[in-house]
Amino acid sequence: MTGQENANAPQSLPKVAPLLQFRNVWVEYGEKVVLERVNLEIPAGAFVSVVGPSGAGKSTFLRLILGQEAPSRGTVLFDGARMAAECGPDRGVVFQRYSVFPHLTVIGNVLFGLECAAAPVLGRLFGARRRAALAEADAMLDAVGLSSARDQYPAQLSGGMQQRLALAQALVKHPRVLLLDEPFGALDPGIRVDMHELVTGLWRDHGLTVVMVTHDIGEAFKLGTRVLAFDKRRHDPHAPQRYGATATYDVPLLRKTGDARMANVTQNTAGPAAASDHPAESA
Amino acid sequence: MTRLINLRPSRRGRIMAGAVPILILALTYALAAALRHADNPADKVLPTVGAMASALWRMATQVDPVSGQITLLADTVASLYRLGAGLALATATALTLGLLLGVLPLARAVLGPVITVIAVIPPIAVLPILFIALGLGEAAKIALIAIGIAPYMTRDLAAHVAGLPAEQFIKAQTLGANSWVVAIRVALPQMMPRLIETLRFSMGPAWVFLIAAEAIASDVGLGYRIFLVRRYLAMDIILPYVAWISLLAIAADALLQLASRKGFPWAQGAAR
Ligand SMILES: Nc1ncnc2c1ncn2[C@@H]1O[C@H](COP(=O)(O)OP(=O)(O)OP(=O)(O)O)[C@@H](O)[C@H]1O
Ligand SMILES: [Mg+2]
Image (cartoon, rainbow over all chains, first blue to last red; front, side, top):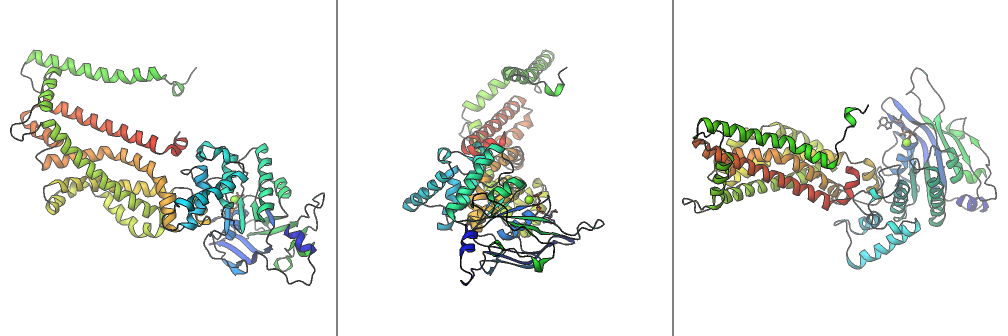
């Protein structure tokens, strides 16, 4: 959506700073280089799909945005400011598993985020404030189609319902970025399609910025406005840890123009300086 | 052919299969007692069932002229009070420390080694210290039970919290929870079913420490009574007392299990 807005905007308008900027970011664990020379920008409103072989550092990339981990070199800018190395409520996340709290009911899980913000000491709300929060949480449950399971515990829900709940739980906080790490990896194909519709709808309705890691290339192209592929550009057969992965392909997709055709495949073979990762500019 | 590992008795079969060894034990005892009494009617080592029943009846109904109380009742109340107080103290300690250690890596770094050291000290070895420091009254006995089981419970609970999926802690943070809210709303509730499990496992040691403390310095209590009447070789009192203690232990275990099932319905799916 923002991709289109930007594309239609006159060139003379001052450019809005991208929501996320990676400037020569490296992630190293001792000798082991996981990510190297990651240079890219993610504008607000984008739906970025991240693909790549196992161990390429996709989850690591997500953890950087989440603030769970800090880069060993380079900077990650969130909204123009250096990222604090701690997770905060402006970033929502859904993992493949364990995203919901097993000891809280469905409504309790959604309510939790609202209670945290409003009651930092007791962690609970009472009276009118609780009723207001409950109304908000119920509306969110309705949006993901879980109203009928309102008072059940996660263990009683199917895998798809648990992921719906995890989405509702994250979105009730109105995060700036929603991070999804293989959110549908454990679901069967039919339910996946339902979840695709749900996520696309939520992305559009809430004006979200989404970064989603997936192993399913079809899913990546179906949902994303842009597909990032992480892989190692160099490989030393004698020291596999020597080189890290980076965004080797950056594919902006023109969407909702009728046929969602691929446009302007950028292959970043020339190194970080040439990495033009702004779909709006290349469109 | 069905493998041995796949042979499962039905529900009724299981109950019957479980009753057989108990019946054999009871019959063996009755037979041995009868044989010894045929040899020597004054035998004290293996009292007959009738002798034990009448001794138990005496302990459970007659007021002791010295203490002015019904002996079995007074002993049971005294012992359960000590046990309950010791368990409560251990639970409070283990819950607080376990939460702290499980949630805060900093606390784990500071307190982890101390607790490991304390956990390896044999509790009975510190009993003299407790008697010296706290006197021979109730406090020392309660303290022995608490000291005996709290380190194990603490480490078990801390490990359980530390083992909760990291995703939950990340998720809670992205939902705006501070450390305190993570502790009381994410970690603490998920500790509770485990606390009951740990308590169940600690009941055995707790009884051991209780009876040891009562045997050494006390004037009332189940353990005290057993060690007192041992001087008169009163097996007709010791054996019913042991059976009574076992019954109390089984009842406590059943209560804890019931509490876990009723109190934490969300944990049931994961358990099975
Ligand atoms: N704390 C750590 N210490 C050392 N190595 C780590 C650490 N965390 C991750 N790695 C390594 O970083 C690499 C990338 O891990 P990451 O989880 O980001 O991969 P991924 O692309 O998400 O893989 P998958 O598709 O299997 O989920 C892996 O080789 C992993 O072993
Ligand atoms: Mg991963």
